[in-house]
Image (cartoon, rainbow, N blue to C red; front, side, top):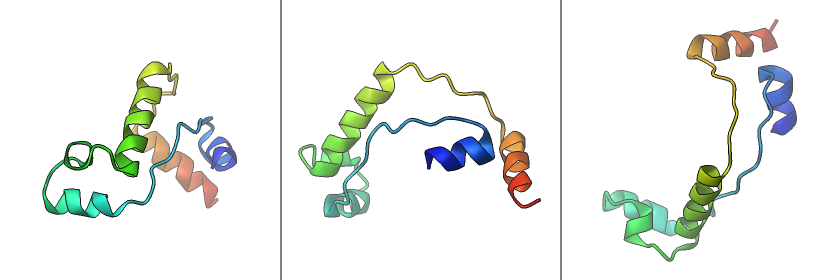
Length: 79
């Protein structure tokens, strides 16, 4: 993913984590309740909290790309 984003979009990305596949996600959706409130101790909820902590602590300097810029860069892949 890092190589593809660099090659085709010209941006570097960093892996901040992952979210486990968790049956509680479907149940939270059915109950129309955020997973972190529905099952706060589930594996996926823990992953979401960890990811949120990493994102808020990390200084992310990404270029400001508008939708037009992204589409143009993606279209360049097919040329």
